[in-house]
Length: 154
Image 1 (cartoon, one colour):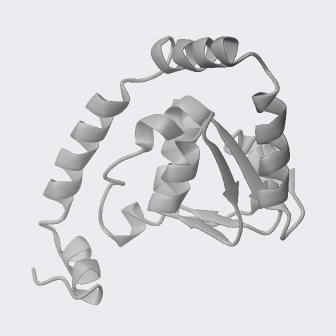
Image 2 (cartoon, helix red, strand yellow):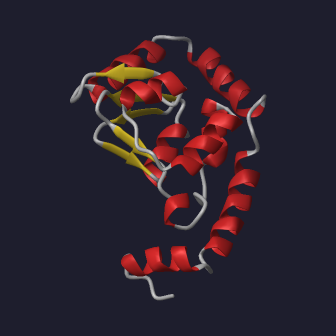
């Protein structure tokens, strides 16, 4: 399993990268947010992983929302699997990893494969579509203003 230990900030790409992991350990004060729509575009990847983790309705609200929240809310939403005190997310993630390492590897691998192939959205197809929409969004004024802030010539 891929295990994320999240401390500090999980914003944009870091947010969906964590959501793409098998297990997420969030520190209590970690600040989670998807600001992409607010700055002019759809997240270009990772929405399918978010849908798998929290469901379509909640994922839609998180993508549109732009409202930051902390680790306890991430746990409540199903975005995080474990909550750790600040400064202890990595230690807790290592404990979780050790517990999985004690399990029979073949059974862990089969379980991971099962969940990756049954009942999960089409990650690549969804990300390809999101990338198409992202490219289109970048043609509009709000996105172009944001891109200029990052030094991108538009």
